[in-house]
Each structure stands twice: as C-alpha cells, then as structure tokens.
Length: 149
Image (tube, rainbow, N blue to C red; front, side, top):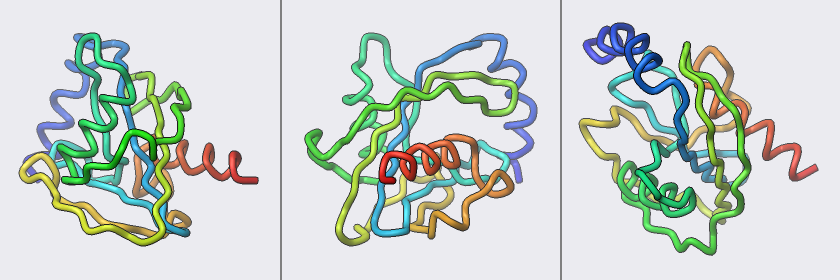
C-alpha cells in the first residue's frame, strides 16, 4: 500500500529527472512459464527481473548483476540470448530495454531480495496481460514468441 502511494508520487518526478534511461530485463523461461517479480515501489503489477544500468556498464553484465541481486540466481553469461533492444514506456517514463532470454529445463528456486521485491514466482506466460503486468513482460513475451515461430 505504501509502495503504491510512493510510486504515484515519484513517477512524475522520475520522468523529469531521468527522461530516458537504459535498463535491462531478463526473461527466464521454462516451458510455458516465466519468472516474474513484483516490486514494493510499484502499482502492484508484475515485471521481469532487471533494472537500470550503471554508468559504463555493459548491458549483459547489468542483466547478470540485476538477476543475481533480485533473485539470487547466478547464471553464466553464455546462457543469455540477446540482447533485443526494445523501446518501452512505464507510465509516463520512457526507457530503452535490453532484453535477454534464458531458457531452463526446470524451474529453479529463487531467493527473493526483500524489501526491494515483495513477490517472485513462476507463472504461465499466457496469464500475463496489461492488467497484471508491465509492458516489459508483455513486450518480451510477444518478442520471444515471434523468435520461436
């Protein structure tokens, strides 16, 4: 509840101070399930693990770091397919997203980083929509299903 209120207050400020940022997202896929996370500082929708790039950080290294920070998963960089560069919006904020895809043969247990995240779980990707997930999730699903056709 507090996170949602803070999110609504800081979103316009964030858009002014950081009008265009570069971020990473990791789409971890196991069959028809994907790993999604929920941040305490959000409107409650699901997103993909990932975050902002540090100054002079390569997108692949940033994706690896963010995945480890948010979920405790340390996967080798060679497992990362991508990146695919997407131009996305979250509310009034626009950002460049470097999407990496990792396919695993079985769901792997994750260690959610609290308090940054409030939830982390494997979900059937067909259940994700604009109602319950941010644009990074739906764009990644569309992108990956186009790759695999």
